[in-house]
Length: 196
Image (cartoon, rainbow, N blue to C red; front, top):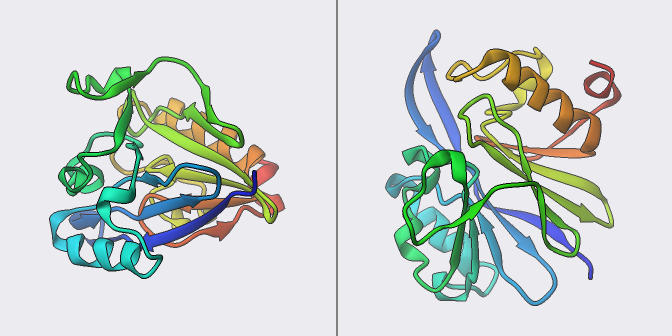
């Protein structure tokens, strides 16, 4: 089955020096196959943008049947309530509510879509690896909050384990052709990133 990744709501961070003032995650749609898969839902402030992004692809919230949460910080799950028809996935280390499907190991969710453990930002941070004709995309959540983290090779400012965060960054960079950061648009994972 042929997969593609579409950003339906571009997230962003706003900082004053190193102080985080505002955070809204990117929401990505995995297109192809028999499922409509959404990764992260951003914040209520971007709710209309998320709905519009889905609508522009002839989808509504009721059409999403799988919702993957890279982690459970509020800026990534703020619109989960829009998707009551979906099966929600989160890592067990995030201590999700009972209605989530708890992911305990790296797993192929459907052919070409894998959930991989990429801890560091949180203990239960998870990324989504998707094979497409254009190459392998990894929707990284806050394993790579922004492209700047990749360019400067610095872990997320907010992390529970800096060493684990750097190992997760390396795992993603070695495997991905393109990275979708937690806050921003997809970017090319160039050879520099692979050699770190």
